[in-house]
Figure: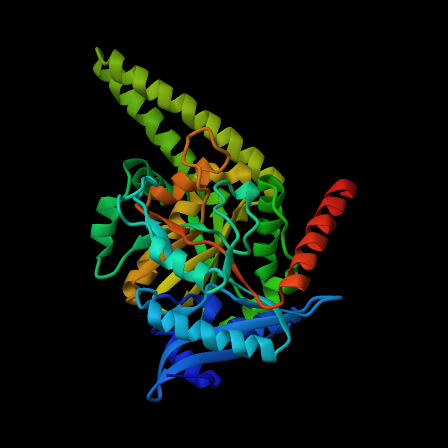
Length: 420
């Protein structure tokens, strides 16, 4: 077998068919990262001209140090074939030494152990063989974080994935939780409309992300970041950004019509007599409608007749659709717009023969009082299975400088936190 640099075409042909691929391992992602100062290489292992392993290698110069290399969600190879892994790493090491590398970071799209929808461990599924092999090959594991708040990895180790391979929407819907089904059905009664975003209205998604970042306490990106990624990926239909618009005026008119029907029904029952129980139920419904109308009138006065209230950013590559970013205004979450979004995109994935719908990052703490439980429970409602990945590893090329870099970086973070 021979370790070689691959052409972009060779890499793309292998990547898009790999069981372990993701949007992080596509040429267009290299283009996105190029505008953030990252260079890249495509490397692979060939057996008689057939590519049997490959990865995108991003690289960036670390000030005062050497080059940092990163294989995002890489490598792409058969992790059950430890011989190929060993041969590929052997070639990687030589390649990195020639490129004046400090270290290489990887975070493979491989389960550490199998989990259920509820996050429970499936016995006897732990990948100790792989973990031991990576350690033997010189990789340093960066630990198993549980809570997202304590996450130091570049990408989530805990994700939630719905297997849709060969499934119909009726079958997928039947497997969803009762509460999830109710919210999907409720969303359809709320005068919601899904709009596909373009460059001209992508700012609406950015506004949603800004609000969500403040609410959930994470650092958001500037509009230029989203625009650049969108322009690059849209050329080859590798991204969909969906917005949900609510029509408050239509919702108000429907509520007023329902109130008129309620009053008409009450009059009819009063004429018949002895209908106290039904009249009481209608009166309670009337009170609910009166309050709803009052709230909607106030909402229209403040926000106008229509408003974008939620959005989702979806990456389309390889065998799966990846729900990368989700955002919504807290005050309008009662309309269940995010349930409608996910249902429609899962339907799109089924129609277009994808094998999986990746809800992406969740917390690894599944207790109901944990900070991340709500997000996990939302994704669990669609019957998405928990995946605990093997995590992040560093392959150290220059041990002395690497240790100095780690010390310097840790010190920098402490100082930054102290003065933030």
